[in-house]
Image (cartoon, rainbow, N blue to C red; front, side, top):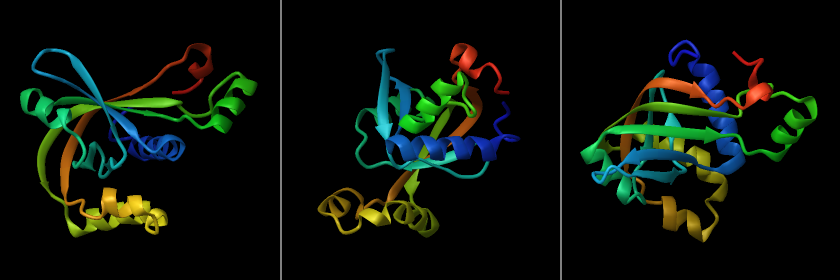
Length: 162
């Protein structure tokens, strides 16, 4: 799988993953050499090989990135119907999970377009108290630059996928 040539498919699989679990997992490595995984609900893939997320609730991830900018993002389609159909067929029609490997860039102020894209995603929850508590003042993003995509292979169930 090629990060640039297959970007539309990567974005589609990431969108399916998000719709089934409402987050991705970003792995980083701390100064102590130990791995750390952070759930991120605001990750958005942009142009080929690039993405960003609103950095508000993360505590350890920015500390780790200052030490080592390498990251890995895992997107898993956790949809029950997706898994049931696949198990009944004995194969997946789509990759059940992808890893994007790359580096985290600098934190910066979000653009108006980035804010609008995010608020469009969460607008259905705008009537809730949690909407204001979590998302009202999102203003800083961290850019991500991906160099590798790895599909998660699950034996014979993914054998037919390219």
